[in-house]
Image (cartoon, rainbow, N blue to C red; front, side, top):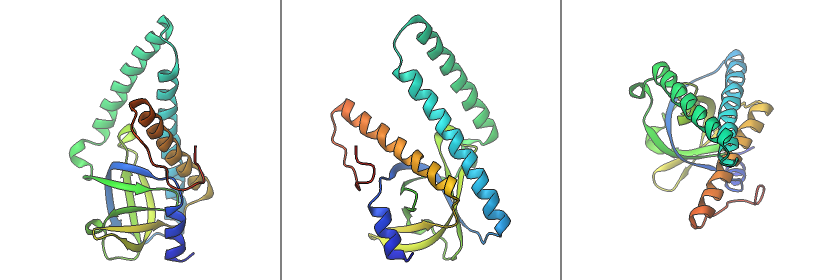
Length: 195
């Protein structure tokens, strides 16, 4: 698939948009690296999904005494997870936050962050699980506006593609629900996952 076709496919899909801790570095993977990264990314996506599902389940239940107690326990567990996460990877060691837009095809990042190398690895650290970044192989696509560049993903396994697509869609769904609750308009790109 050529760059323009990838850009078109990216433009027609729902995207995750927001600030994440982002690092981009030169990386020429071996086949073993590709297999290891796909396995690790699948684990990270499953971890992120389980954390998100647990929060959604707690938030949607009623205010019974049992649910209130579960919410208190959930809050305590979240604090413990946050402490462990901070010990594993202190904020000072995280790459800086950058506003990105991504989906299963690729991502848009600030141009000044992208090294000139052809083979690149992007690390995305999400707040829910900062110590476990997604590490995705990318290739430079095209300039987007004056300051951004489109990078497309390379060598993702089918399972990682499915997990990434679910992650982006769930994030988008929460954003739309939040916008409805606050009464703000939310634009939806593409028709594949239109609600």
